[in-house]
Image 1 (cartoon, rainbow, N blue to C red):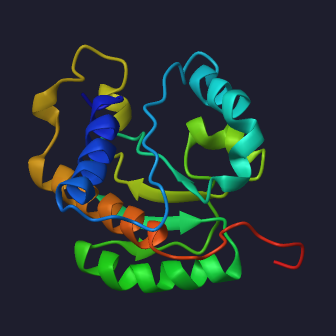
Image 2: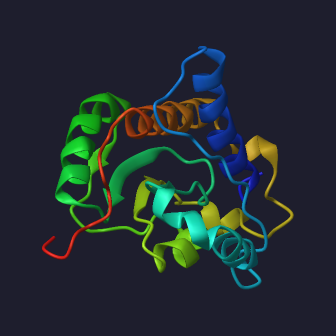
Length: 177
């Protein structure tokens, strides 16, 4: 449930929330359910290899892979224009109890292969206080997830997806950034 059911559910629900509204974003939102992270990021490397010819069309990546705890901060390694959009995004995310982190983020382990090929990352950092108490144990069960925390995650991911998909911002850094 915590690893990785929560992340799959959060990101799928965020994309479905947008879809169910009948909204049409300017940019494509791609939902990827990664696999085989713990045995060598195999899903991430397979994705990077399969899509390497069009990774220049991948605007930014984010990953939910740290359970279902509340998101408490965002971080990103993006261009100045990307940071300006994130500043705007914070007006939506701050009421959810989310702060801005100054340090950069690649977005998560499964994104490492595409980050290395130039796709910038965005992190919605979750409270993982009990993550490793449950991770890869028989105690990793659905009853450990809190519906209100999952709702907050879905709202944050939906806001992030919608704002990025409706911008014309280039998130990749140029040589001078």
